[in-house]
Length: 196
Image 1 (cartoon, rainbow, N blue to C red):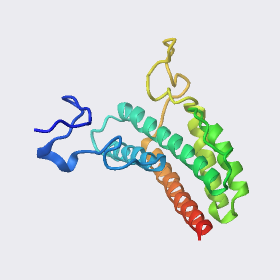
Image 2 (tube, rainbow, N blue to C red):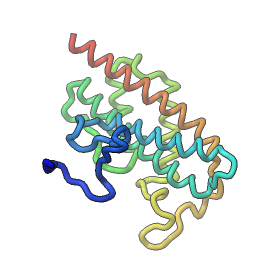
Image 3 (cartoon, rainbow, N blue to C red):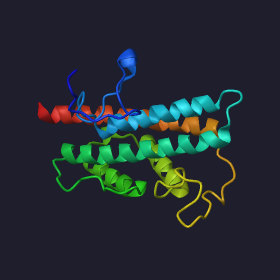
């Protein structure tokens, strides 16, 4: 048996009997970009929110992983978007801020959209995404609210909040991700136009 150049342990390893479920990570199978991973977090969010719609689902415990996954989806997408805009504009200064604050990269994305052709983002899409960023930032400004029930000083998160409806959340999230996919397509098409 040949020794693999890749690391593994008992939990994080491949399985020849269930090889269709072996997920490629690291340099194995190519490297995905932030947009791809953002969609992965979106898919995970959808799975959780759709499970929450089923009878018997315990929505009080599903809310945290669903909201965390959606917030991370937004964070990855905003970082991808800003970096792609920098490439489309040939602007080496336009790069995503390496922070968890969604508003920082949303501000950079808005600046990028002002420099790019207007057809790349419709006003209603900008409004929808702006509202999503605002709402998520208000409840989870640094990406910790839905990771832990308490902060580092043992203060309970969401003490001032009482309800989050997972059906409302599902409908809204589906709309924002359609915008993300449209922006990705339009930006890729625009960059292709620039190359020809």
